[in-house]
Length: 256
Length: 360
Image 1 (cartoon, rainbow over the protein chains, first blue to last red):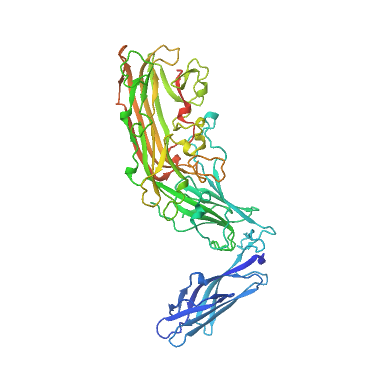
Image 2: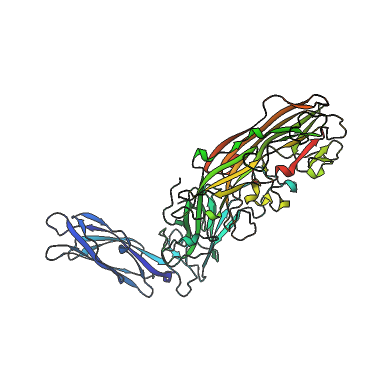
């Protein structure tokens, strides 16, 4: 359902310079602007010549905009060439990012050329974000396939709560299974494999990494090269969601 | 980071072949950008993988003490020339010290977990020496060429002979034959048992030798992690009856052959709720049934003797190879599964399944 989109993410990825407005050598270019009210501060100065690309990386170029109650946002980027007395304009790239008639926000990668003068082209991407229902912070929306289309929607009318992640640790099996008689039977008591569960919710912020997170009994502790792989299972209520699993944390020490 | 492989809509697998601490994030990737954005909901699983390693060859130093083998009559030290006797005992030392044991298991192990100093999670990691008998031939040959052997059976309660040296005896007059269990493959060998409140069926510490012990080495080793000294010892013995254990045979011991092949594994395990003992039934307590082999010591005890002379000068006389105890150390750092090294971690144990078979 389109109304489930509460944010869109706009990433400015690359600028192609068609004219650096500099008569002698490469230009000293900088940019600034705005995405849906989120300001893009004056950038560092890039040395770039005509017909070259400036890659844009980092959070300054990555904006998540709250679009609840809005039908469109505007992306504006002004370009300049530093000069001794006054900076020369490279023009302004301006684009309106709007909901379609069907109420859907665009998704994909796009180009917009500057005008007055047309000295650069901005390459950017737009991603609609299906987010938490602000009235129900414990609920989440889920992604589903619509035919072959990678569109997302909610489970119709049903609030979904992420409950836990469960790790199933394999028990070392008997070398020689002996089922009977009872005095010699050597199966592990049921359940054979033991499970460890974590219900710690992801914060609505970047994931922080603190030593106390690994205090007993909050962490799963295992021996390197112990039996595996460890089976992981995420659970929602009701069970219907698609999850992505990722490791996260500071770089680990290389093996001895 | 260890590999995490998506296997279904809400499932994945994680390898254990790294070390350190990290989070596993499971989140609903609403915008399908394969990254977790701050408004995407999910859960965190904190994980620490701990590496256990023999750092130097000299740190794995299990030894045999062949000088501890003693063969005498009736457990009387020095009683090797006698007028009469009840049994011949073969001992390999005692359990009082590493130096006086038949075999002394001994290793220094470096453990490295998470955090900048590598100590994170080490409070939930435990190590010990767990033994397997891989082959046993204890057999006494008697005057009528009958043989009494040690066997491992699953029906020891059916033995009807009079116990000898505290061990059940099957005799020919008994209604039930000994039902030997498959051996080899290996059998777990520990003195720990359910009667003592240390049932090996539960795992953890209870599969190890009763004298298995670990201590952080002092002064502390330089980071990363810590080094632990892990020891244990064993001094297995056996008694050969001077008279046949089946009253139907009126004969005396003529010779005995004593061959034991054993492998003691240096194993590591965890317990997420703490303590080296198994804690079945405790919520979120895992690891105490999952063993990783860091090293092994293969060791043997061998002796072959005839009983010679006549009263008052009955003696035991060595035949064949010189009696000995041997030990050979193998490093498996940073760890392999018990199955990879043919280790048995589960009962039945040798001590509760052993009998004298005097029925043939």
